Image (cartoon, rainbow, N blue to C red):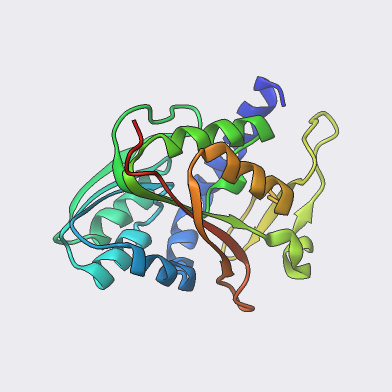
Length: 236
């Protein structure tokens, strides 16, 4: 995928969240059931990097389950959702940064847990997704964990019904779609469907060891495919 198309798709999603921030925040307050599977692997004190943190609900989940002996760094490209995150994380040592991590990736710091939820489907281009996931894996401290989930929306008719046509002048890759938003405002977002083969390639790109893989969330309990990976303690 060329740079112009990557830029175009990223702009679509930034505009989507600018339009839908209030609606998105109101409809995204509950923790994902799939996060429960992480808990046996987590013991405070912990440092956490939450990539695409949105309104901070993963941080809120960690507070509820593990207490506030955590250092939390949340990054998101939408300032309105970050404002909600600030209110959602009382008592937590939290740093929240307005940053488009797709165009401005993190290249320093190490964390006991790097979390990437609800975002990989917004990264345009196969090579860009591989590079993105590899870069984030480098932020995992020795012995630490990297957890990511891919939204399997195309497996479900209710989401396929939301697909709208691409403009004639845009050339995208296989499994790239525009989905409409049907709540109190109308907007479209770019979403990529990560199938089993690509998911396996993303796991390989991390260079980490996968210690758990499962599906969870949504009405049927399987709308997201998770991978939980560990960096070797002896990693140099």
